[in-house]
Every structure is written in structure tokens, then in C-alpha cells.
Image (cartoon, one colour):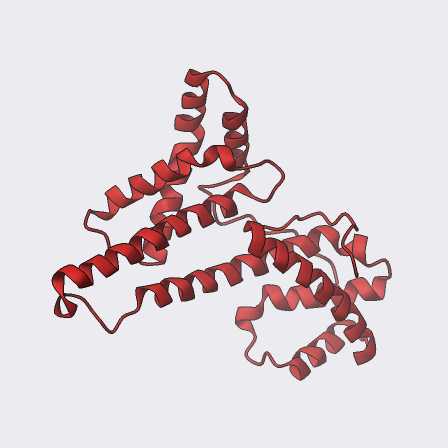
Length: 241
């Protein structure tokens, strides 16, 4: 099965050029050049990132307009820009986490103040904004991780697996992950049947390839939870693989 080309990222407002500009900004020592790089290449991406996160996760418990909240988040991102380290994950993931953590903290603190000041009748006391934010954050993180997981295997398939039959099975697994939203029956037996039909491999062989991919998943997920990103190029240095 031929490997199709990686899709262009839908995050067109925060591209590799944005990340490169952040790296240049952090290395630049001349204040006027740092300001120019930020205003011309970074500011708009930060504003759009903040705006999307505010509305995606419904961070609305603020006593100022959402546009003011957006500017607060952008200022916080700017103040933390120097902490981003080149080669330690993607800038988009890093600054998404910084923005979400800032908003979760202040959103939930403001919600508590509203309940104390206005009483339960003035707020929807049946809602739990902490749980809502955490749930939606988890959904977003799972989707983001799975997208990164697919990108990782697109980059490393022929490095990890050498036999054509193994590559075909791994390719089939990645194809199913990419199209997971279109699959109605997602139980293990049904997936194995689909992979067998796609590759003409037996169950034992499929299991062997899947187990290798699971070991990579454990390390990839650990890195994602720790840094908000994963390395797309495997160096072969992980233990216990």
C-alpha cells in the first residue's frame, strides 16, 4: 500500500515560519530587531492562537471582554517566549499549553469569585467549569497526540520496520488511525479483520507489528505528556524496545 503524502497542517496561522521567527527572536540581541521580528512574524499567530483557545474551550468567566482576555494571554505568551527551546518539541504545542494553563487558572479563579460575590442564583451552579475545561482539554490533546503519532510513523516507518510485509501492516494501522472518525466498529476483532483484508497478513503477524508500535506509543505518549509534543525522528535510543 503506497504511503500518501502528509497533509498540510490546518494551523495555517501558526506555521513553521512562525516557529523559526520565535527562534530568531530568542537569539536576537538587538531590541529593535526583536520587536520587528515579533510584530511582523509572531504577533498575529499568538493573537489567533489565544482567540481560538478562548472560544474552543469556552473560557468565558472573566469580568472583562474576551478581546481583553486575548490580549492578556498574548502578553503572557510574549513574556514566556524566551522559555521555548529549539528542538524540544513544536512551538505550536508549547504555546498552546502555556495559553491553556494560564486560562484554566484564571478562568476557574474568576468563576469561584463570581459564586462568592453574586451567589449561586447569579451563576449556573450546576456547571463545573474545571471539569468542563479539563474534559475539552483532554479531547483536544488526544486528537493532537494522534495527529502527531501519525506524523511520527510517516517519518519513521521504514526505519523501524525493514520487511515489506511489516511495513504494509504498519501502514494499514496508520491508515485506520487517520480515518478513525469514519470507522463505525472500532473493536479489536473488527480492526484485525480490516488489516488482514488490506495486507493479506495473518493475525499472529499483525499482532507482532502492533506490539512494536505499542512500545513506541508508550514512549511517545510519555514525551507528549511531559513536553506537549513528540520528536518526529526516532533515534533508536529508547530502552526496552
